[in-house]
Image (cartoon, rainbow, N blue to C red; front, side):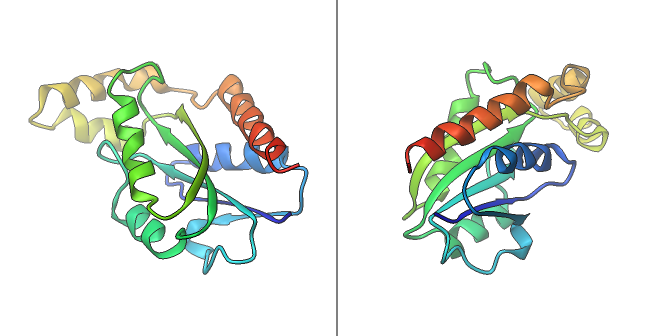
Length: 165
């Protein structure tokens, strides 16, 4: 079995989770940035990681998924600044699954990452009061993903891999 771990990361959150997943995979594997991926052909399983932007996948993520995942077996991992118990989060994560049309999705992991100062400043200036509140909550994201979340990513990878033994 050959496994790919590919990720997009602007602030380092998704990269940290990708590295944890990669470390936990006992099979032949590769890790790379999504921008380096030319095809998922030749991989039996691909772990694909993306940050959440504007409550779902942004255009580069949508383009990657439309181009590469049809007929492929994938596990998604998503980082975001929201607490994992935030009720609307499941709907936002569903947008990633919906964008993966034609893929065999075998799992989805998500965890909170640290909100960048630039994003917080953008949110603080946004006309929507809810987004302003999110910007004010940046301090609650500092240091994420923490060691507990990183270990949960390793457990997720091991659980997915057990399905292919």
